[in-house]
Amino acid sequence: MFKKHVDVKALQRLSGADKKKLRRTAKERFPQASESDLDAILPPKVEVTVAKYPNRVLVYGIEGEFPMLFDVDGRGHELFPTVYALWKVPDMLPAFTLKGGEVSRFILGGADLMFPGISIPTEGLPSFQAGKPWSIKVPGNPAPIAVGATTMSSNEALKAGLRGKALRIAHYYKDSLWDSADGRYVPNEGFYDDIVVEDPNYASPSQPIDSSEDHAEGMDDSTIEGEEAAVDVSESHIRDPVIHIEAVEDLTSGVSEVKLPEDKTSEEPSQPTEEREHQNLSTEEIDSLLEKCLLQALHTSVKDKDLPILGSTLWSNHILPYRPPGVTLDIKKSSHKKLSKWLQSKSSSGLISAKEDKHKREVMLLGVNRGHPDYIAFRPEKKVQELVERHDNVIAEGSSTNQLEVAEIYKPSSHVNPIFMAVGADTGKYYSASEASDIVFRYIEKENLVKPTDKAKVTLDAALCDALYKGAIKKGSAYPTEIHKRDLGSTFLNRMQIHHRVSRGDEVIIRKGAIRTVQIMTERRQGNKKMTRVSGLECFLMDADSLASELQKKFACSTTTAELPGTGPVTYLLIVDSNK
Image 1 (cartoon, rainbow, N blue to C red):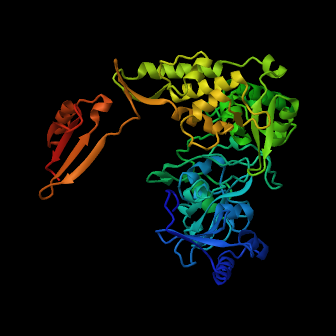
Image 2 (cartoon, rainbow, N blue to C red; image 1 turned 30 degrees about the vertical axis):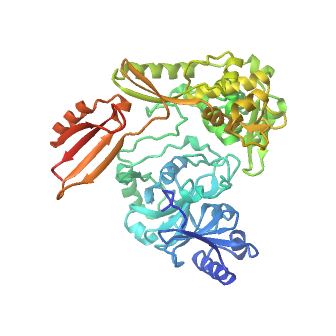
């Protein structure tokens, strides 16, 4: 429903009577919610707005804050809470628990929830009716990730052998409704861009402490509908033993092993002895391994220009990839127990600079002390980089020499020339976006322009200020004195001359301006005949006459080329399809 962005048709405040009516509807729709729960999502003394969408969906939210409820049919019959409301009151709705964090990838991709993907509790499948709102949770994480309506009752599900669709998803984390909030956030450290795993700071008394990276989920091809993959995982706790035997026999056939992307273990069913020994690490060994992975990340993948970095991003994208093969790195089994406490301890030692973000409620990495004794003494391993380079070489060797390559490049302008000359860079060559960004960050490091009180910002000296803003600020307006690191790269690139390079084999052409697109237009002629016009092929080293000849053979149609008036050598490719 909210997979794609849709503009709001109208936005208005609710009257007092409408707010009371909405509260009554929510109470009837969510019988588990108490009065205090409703006060949390619909505070009595605040303004409530309703956003009307072209598809008749109504979204209710607290003015200036987050959307809390949405009505699918606009009449209150299909009212659901948003994930923001469920993060305030996690138990507002009954919840299905997934088999593991890996299953959440499919939910966040827009797939509906299938019964085989649900973890059935030991007491059996809970009772429910069709068309009722339920939420979805990940084991070890109290925050729901999606909400939807049940497609059948529990009795019908048992009769069907716990097969088929369980929940028709109406809204999920990372969809356009979640993204529409200005202050969008995640509730805990288990939420990543494409997956939700257990919260490392949450310990459930009814659930053993186990890293979500240990889960291997099975998937059945029968659960993939169209382009959306739904999850099919075998379940060992089902109330009816006959259904249990049939379900297990059906679901375990053709099961393939799936692991989280950081897990580099072998896909063979037998686990090597060395990997089994890695799992029995003491607390001191885990602390030592955490230290090693952090230092490896700080030396190789964590760049100053990328700072600040969220603690969860540092953990998933930089620390976990450097663990030894076959090792499960669980922060809860270390002496620190929590990721935030571990990062704060490293900040206290002076290795890094970390601070908790009050808005996101998460510790952020602000800076790296590359002069720290531990950083200097550490010798990073080159094995990971060598593997990447070897992989790139294999791809390069196997690629075709006639492969078309298009890239945007930048040439230094008179505005940024002083910055390039200050770091000894050539002002006459072309640079990629990353290479140009490295130039300005090298200048910042050379001149020591990082703001001491806020590592995420850069103080502008005269040369850098002129490079970024001279001629772009209106007369009479004050020039900025600082800039955030995340805005520095794009601002610097905007002051350079953009070009694009097109290459195929030995033929390379560099042109001014951004990459142009191929224009395709279709016109209807007499009867049911259509004519398709294509222009702009020469920008990609494509010969219009040769392509016209190939298309004539492939589609059995007439083709012709003609010069496009007013553009010199650029031509039209005309394709007349007489079969339609």
